[in-house]
Length: 141
Image 1 (cartoon, one colour):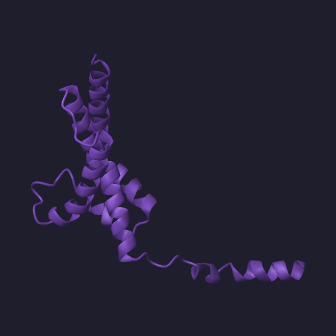
Image 2 (tube, rainbow, N blue to C red):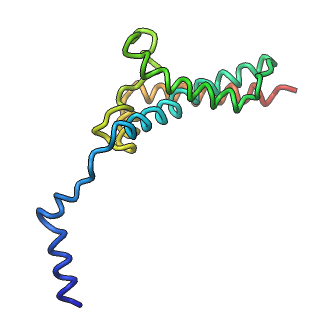
Image 3 (tube, rainbow, N blue to C red):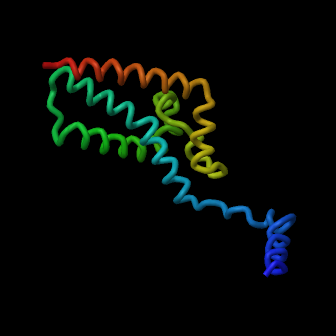
């Protein structure tokens, strides 16, 4: 048994370990990751703010706020990667090409995005805006 364990440890060290690198992800998986990240980090905060603002001015949202936020975030994630390269001036704050980089893992895409000064500013602005809108909506009688 000890000889068997020694063989296993030798097989997975050195050059053999280098051959165990994960296969590159498919373009479909990469696009899906980009769509999910775009919807979560750019669409969701924007449309949640819009729903809270509509609630603050006492406007009813057809289908409810949750459906509005989910559908608009998905629509934003699907259309933005297609439209942003064509109209970069209009989509400079709503599109992150890093989310569609096939050479990065899902976690690396988030990590690299968070390190950018613009993303940090966007996150702080979103937190403050959602906090203020949340207080405004909660104070409605």
